[in-house]
Amino acid sequence: MPRLFLASAALAGLLAVMTPAFADEARMPRTITLSGHGEARTAPDMAFVTSGVMSQGATAAEALAANTQTMNNLFAALKAAGIAEKDIQTSNFSVQPRYDFGNGTTPPKLVGYEVSNAVTVTVRKLADLGPLLDRLVSSGSNQIQGIGFDVSEPDAALDAARQLAAADATRKAKVYAAAMGVDLGKVISISEGGGQQPQPPLLRAGPMMADAASAPVPVAAGEQSLSVDVTVTWEIR
Image (cartoon, rainbow, N blue to C red; front, top):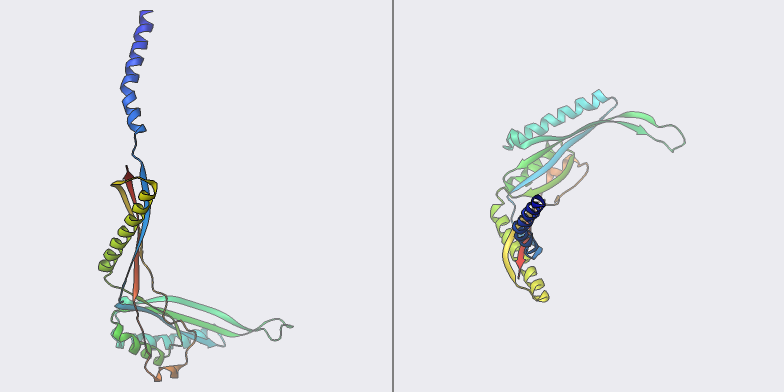
């Protein structure tokens, strides 16, 4: 009996110690979590253009030889324009057969091959973009697959977007708190999502004729949109 009594007393003591801990967990703070969105616009200062050459020949070797010669002219034009090697990257290369499908009543007939080679070029001075397009087409490029714009130093615009996102989340939280008859307390957590939004290509075209470079290429950079999303959790009272 004494041993049973001691065991019961020990268990009672342990429960007495643990009870405050369970009570603290039961008093976990009530919270409210809202997300905010912020967006800032700024003028881009750099561009990306994808340009290439599509060549055809009776054989794959013939098409490749013609394509290689024209691509060498394109690389020479890029070098003459002052584009650094680090800003030139091959983005596509393909060799495909060409078929004549006739009227659909006979099997397709192999009539030759098509070779495509394209490079993506980083243009760090927007004033050079129009003249560069002229050079590319004059050198033999017959494919301009896309142009996009970017901001080389986006931190200032992103910080402005962060402030707008935080203000947006706070505004929403205050509205909900007022509607529910509670007060916002201290901020418990903040997490960021989102980031810079890529600019849709300004120009997307298929094959271009060489004489298209006879007139200067007009280019409009517009503005770049940078956005941030933030999620904030407050204690409510």
